[in-house]
Amino acid sequence: MASLAQATHGELLVLAASGDQSAWNELVERFSQMVWSIARSFRLDDATAKDVSQTVWLRLVENLHRIDDPERLPGWLATTCRREALRVKGIRDRVVPTEFQYDIPDESPSLESMLVEDEEAREVVVGFATLSDDCQLLLRLLTTEPPLSYEEISELVGRPIGSLGPTRSRCLERLKAALSARISGAGSDSFEPGDDAK
Image 1 (cartoon, one colour):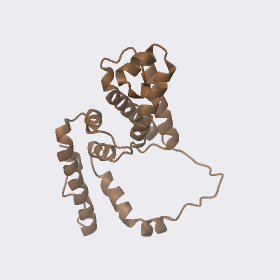
Image 2 (cartoon, one colour):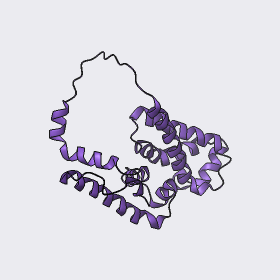
Image 3 (cartoon, one colour):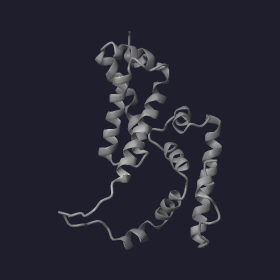
Image 4 (spheres, helix red, strand yellow):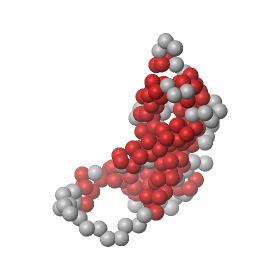
């Protein structure tokens, strides 16, 4: 083959499965940033996101001969990454810290200064947390760097491509409603967060 960079995903998979290290390196080069971005979109720290990414590549090694449609490899990687990130996040969220001993002084800014400096950002974060998990995931995936294609996002969230735009608009409207309710002091009883992605 003249150039691995010009090879299709399927051609690279076939070569990698036959033991071609250069083809494997090209696959990693081609998709590592996408896998990393998806892992980080779940708000994992760098070390955890790195572990998730490595697990995704391990899963690909294990399944090189079993991928039904090689040209859909980006979607397979994205789905595998999402599942692994959710699994790791679930384990992490179940861990309840008991007692911490800090060996270094806490030099982080005070809560008061953070609230003064980042009041708007804090309101957005609080409002964002009222959205459904589906809305939060969709909005994160739509803002990854580098950006994912609508086809990849569609496969990740399990929705038709044509529904992504309207669903995003509804999620943003819910976020605006949450922010308006907080600003006006009316509370958040005027909407149901669970209905965000319907």
